[in-house]
Structure formats: structure tokens, C-alpha cells
Length: 301
Image (cartoon, rainbow, N blue to C red; front, top):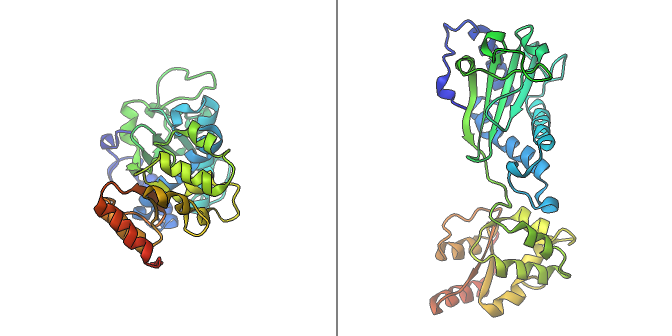
């Protein structure tokens, strides 16, 4: 979003209003650094809500139709309003007693409505770049001179001009957000596996086909959607490991300290608590590593 173009400083004519809005947003978000941490997570949640990967097998914004893309902004608007705990007024947000519009784009620009730029009102700008997995959040006073010239589109909406980008005050500038938890999986195959009867057999086959691939536990929950205790199907004594151990395959769950240690010996140095990986022993030494782990009680960290 070219945040480097911004020239908003204390000498800028919009600074007084923009800084007041920035300070109120930062205070309500728990500080600018906290906003930088949390906003990308809201973006991921909003995108995932529309992708609905398990039902649709989609994992990228480019796979959505145009109507669905607009709903990402609507969902994110609700998330931001809830995060800041501010009401909806004449416009989308009321911040520090000021009505503020809010616009999102998954492209390169926004569509600012006439009712906002006609009176040069403030606007929160949100941007999602799903190719680079980064997002931005900024503030602008939607003055006509900051927008494209001409009549705009059929709804009289206008985008920010190249020169107008320098009048944006960025609160979150091109911060990374997590990739889809289903990224890298064959989602059509994933949906087929969800039809396999028996949670233990289904999980075992999934991990056979996805050896050495770290997945989030939400993937396991989606795979085992019809199981009362899906995580039980990943543990010994009734789960996939009962089948896979005969094939020298172990399912390592980041919740367990012993599994994290084994993952480290297989080259996964930082298996998170919400991550799972299936590994297959490829040598006598690795078989011994798995055997020792089988002999130890799993120690919850």
C-alpha cells in the first residue's frame, strides 16, 4: 500500500484530526503495538470466514467471487468495531465523538462513497494483500482533492489518487498475517477424506498422505468434524497412532513436551502447542527415537 509515500506529520493540515483519531483508536486497542499484533489476526479470521475452506476447498482470496470479496470488508468492519468497542453512528464507526467511514480493499485501492468525500469526512482504510499475506490500516480525510478526478464509478465512488496516498496516516503498515491454516493441503482430497468412516482410520490415512507436513490442530478438528473428541483420534489407545506405529509413523502433538522433543530430533525445532506433524522413521536411529518416545509417558507441558 506504499506507506512510505505518507507525508502526514505535525505540519500536515489534517494532522490534528487524524492524530486525535489515531490516539483514540490506539488507546482502545491497547496501544499501537497491540493493534499491529491484533489487526492481522482479525484479517485472517475475516478472510477464513468467507473462504470456508472445509466446505469449499478454497484457501486464497483470489478464489472468491467479487461479491464475497466485498463481504470480507463487512466482516472485518464488525471485527474492528468490536475490538475498539465503539458504536456505529451515521457512518460505520464513532471514534472520539467523530463519525468515521470504514473501507476495505483486496485490490490496490478503495471505493470512497460520495456521502463521505462530499463533506471531506474521515475514513478508516483497510487493505489486504493475499499474495504477500500482509495487511494495512490507515486514516485519511476523504477530501475530493485526494481522490481520483472525474465522475467515479456508477455509484459515484472514487479511489484514492496516487498523490492522495501521501495524505494517509498509517497505523498498521504492511504487517504480515498468517497464511490459511489449510494452505498447502489438497483441499479436494481433504474433503474426500472427511467421508472416510471411522475417525481413527480417517486420521491415519490423512497423516500417511501428509507426512512431515506441520498442520494446525484446526485442520485435525475439521478432518474429524463428526467425532465427539477429535483429538483423541490422534492419540494412542484408540487413535491413529495405534495403526501408524506399525508403519514406523508417529503423530506428534505440540501440546506434549515429549512429542516436541521428538519433533526436534526430526528437524522440527519449534513445534507450537497448536501444531501437529506426522513423521516416519527413515533409519534405525529414528526408529529408536520413536521407540523411546513410546516408552515414556506423555508429559503435558
